[in-house]
Length: 230
Image (cartoon, rainbow, N blue to C red):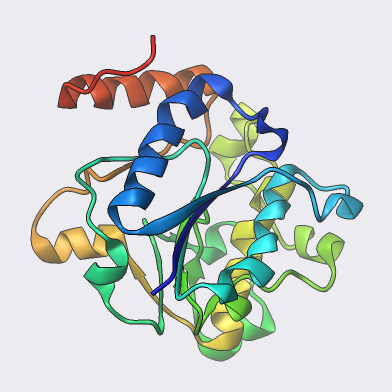
């Protein structure tokens, strides 16, 4: 069984203060679940003129080569106590996230979401899929500009300026792909709720500066008594 844990850090320049806290734990988790650990460092979608998050769509070709693929943003911390989520869900037909949003909060309805009545708003900082679903889930948009025009940031995102419409294109496209292909979705948060426990396995902040992210990760590490680079 081939598993892949993959992240994105083009040229190794993203948020060094944060990545030096997250990357060792991502690599450790990959080893724990018997997965290869890979970092996307080169651009393939530079022609779009869009931010680096569009490079996640390289998974359209990469992920189908593995039985299971987990994409994790470079600024996401995984607890050493986290279980193998693929074993927890144990269903190749399921796509899973840490949590999901209501797609209509940010993204206009599409013909696919109307047809399927799917309101899943994908949160692509943590995405699990199998070779059964990978090509459909990570299919890039046909028209990047048209897709951006269907996105509206939340008030809190517009206020901070940390998250712009083009930064949500991956979330929007995966939301449409889920509706278009009728993919089944589950979440780590939902799994924890079923188990009657808190989700302490993952830490990720998105609408804040790099320094705030590193403070929160260090707080979690302090709480667990785990040493880290100063």
